[in-house]
Image (cartoon, rainbow, N blue to C red; front, side, top):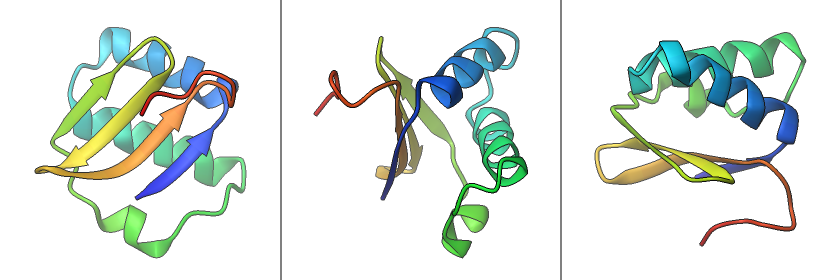
Length: 81
């Protein structure tokens, strides 16, 4: 599992999620955004098949089946466990 802490990316994912509820599309949007901004991602991240996402006030978790592939949190002070 990879964890990213960024208010900028979290806000972008929240805004995208408003009109695109499909977890795979939201995950793809995030990966494209990270790639555009030259954020270092593992090669495995590009081949994950995300089918579920869970969103809280501070974090978005992307799942492939029951395994969490990526957690994106808005800041370091308020991370969810």
